[in-house]
Image 1 (cartoon, rainbow, N blue to C red):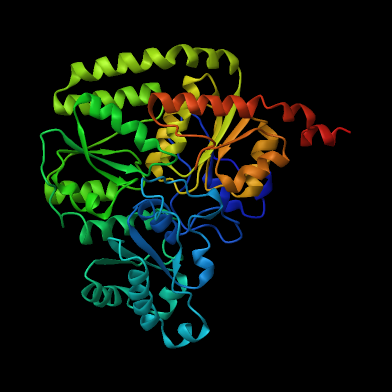
Image 2 (image 1 turned 135 degrees about the horizontal axis):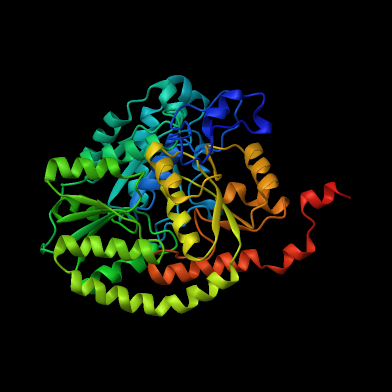
Length: 461
């Protein structure tokens, strides 16, 4: 059987079902999208993180109010962890709003405090176009009816107040938070405003969050093709952009884990079709442009753009391929970005020898397994001990993950790149791919690694 138990998991043998060594002769995928095994110190985010941190947080002109103890509000924009850029920097990602629930509020209920907080926040920032309220674990336990409070406050202040029942303990990972965010935005926002005008070439980009300006590289490519981006969901979006998304002719689904729900809902209610696409790397971006062009009948224009963009980056990419010859990577990302990255590293000549996701579903692992060679370790929801064993045993030339794993890699003397919020992005489309390759080169060939003895060398002393 291709399922395997890592040495560090002897005390939690259930982890064997989550750890797979790719074998093309057997149709097996690691067990995924279930509750974390007791005793397994998971690195997953919670439902609240998926709702606020991924889907809703990039919306640039609403008050994001966390209903719960102040500790939950620590996880907002700080520490450079959230890189969802917008053209509203004087407000977006600058302020943190919380009801700061205290002991007496937990005992006697926090609905009154929530209502007062909404009113006060609106008075302090009357320019905000809406208020989004996020319920944390404590609120789920005491049973505050946030939707009723939001309805009452909306009648009072005259702007949209939307509640998200995204208590952290719900679900098995942050993936449920994506679903909750999509449902609430679809029910309360989408379709509530008409655009000033429409065209036959209006398209939404669903599931791009403008990490370090990714969206600002994507939009010009489609505009050159003659396509207008009516709404981005949710990178650099206003609440009005989301409200008018129902008038597009096509949805381009970019993040294929956080937004299938809303693409299906929009298709069912408004009849708008969607296509799945990746705008990372040369091949995937070119395929995305061709798919969109085929829908709108703009194939010739798309080929002109592709030829022009590829000619600009191909020579430099070929230089990187020579530098990276024989290098190997361990990829650990949220979900679809793991298999996006497999293709990007392949294009710059780096082989994937291990891949993992935090909250991937079966279709994510199926796509990873389609893209990697036999013998590659594919593991669901690894903890830090498992990561350490894989890094130590396989000795990849570089590890790509998020900020939580950065210092583990450094302690093991392994070059690291942040694939979650990037090093110095943006990383999307053709020009962003050059940024990506540049950061990989800087990490792998940094002089500091020659001054560090790796752990295995120390053991031999």
